[in-house]
Length: 481
Ligand code: NAD
Image (cartoon, rainbow, N blue to C red; front, side, top):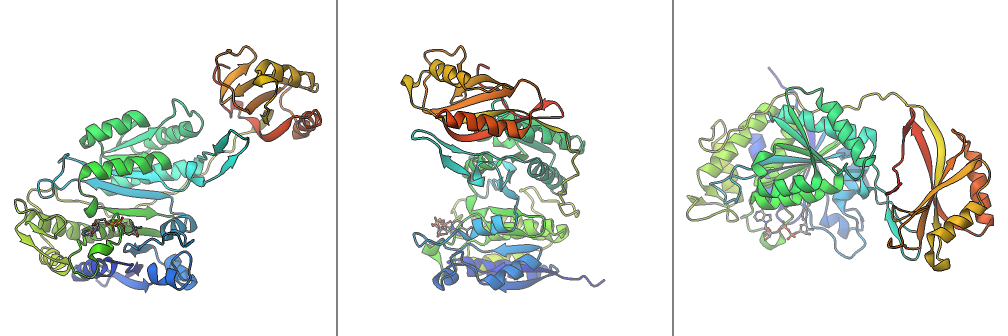
């Protein structure tokens, strides 16, 4: 039966990129994987031509029309005002999931955790990385942490679908929702809701700090980990480090239409052009791509042939050890050794088995809750009266119009009025919570309140409306409220 080919975008990159890409494509071709390649140029040459993101405009069309992009490492421009190519692609193409398997290949590659075999799936676009930061007073800066319901749903669903496609048994969610009940809480609740749709997969939740400690001490107990952007960023570096195989690791950036696959390592300019680089990281990324595209059988055959090559001690210089290896090979000879083992099953290392379902992570429809305005947090820059909260409280109360009540004032989240403690340190940034005497209240009343306070000489630096959703509070209480 004739199989139609899937077009993918290929970039040979910089440094060792061309050598390892050639090796990887030779393996895909020898395995007769039904792919065809649209080659684009990205990286150094394009930066040198003045393209600040390292890519020419016409190449975007190629990337956008194909479902997958296999990318060799590129050399990052330093200090020239150029933008990171990876960050540009990730943001422009809505690559919402970052997938980083961390596995040890002991005893063939030295590792302190021989049984480690986990994958970290990290939300890739939201959280503190939305990059919305402000300095509001002389002493205070802030960043907004944004967690959305569709964003959480998509990444969590992706993690469960990934677990199914890769025959994994457990998904662990890590958040800090004991502190951040609304943002991390939304992520955790979404996890619980979606986990119920996957009864075949075990689901557990850990607080991120305890989870990270457990990961460092006992990585063998984890299978798939799903978490928010910042936690996942830190966690994947911890995991990669302790696996001892960062040079063999691939990673994926998954989007709804286009996904990008690459080695974790960089362009290794120190060994470029010598024919000694290890193509394994990019090859592992290519097998991730095949599973993603629904070509599980091809991925399985190639990955098992690669495991056999490692097992047979045929190693490139980066992993060669006289006591573990039998033959030192260069990039091309390593690729030939993998090709010669297509169809073989590893004896000692665990053979891989993937399910041919592909991975889909659709976002469901959400019922829209009713939303009511019930108050407003007004943030002030105030540096008078020795920063005495009671003086501020009294002054604000004098100017509070009818229909509003000053409920409390907090400083760095701690309630300082009414009934604060004299020990609490106060900076020049005050959150003043006004609630409507009668709920709901019209936004025009918020504007009237702001006008009154402004006219009375208060410096308002920002406001946050307080809403309820289906009667549930959509804002946190102040510590001590
Ligand atoms: P690197 O990963 O390129 O190299 C670190 C060390 O590991 C070097 O000694 C190198 O020789 C070795 N090494 C890396 N890959 C190897 C391989 N496949 N086989 C054998 N040895 C290998 O890290 P670096 O030197 O910090 O970065 C070099 C360049 O790559 C920088 O410009 C960096 O910004 C860029 N980079 C790009 C990506 C990417 O495109 N995704 C990722 C990381 C770094």
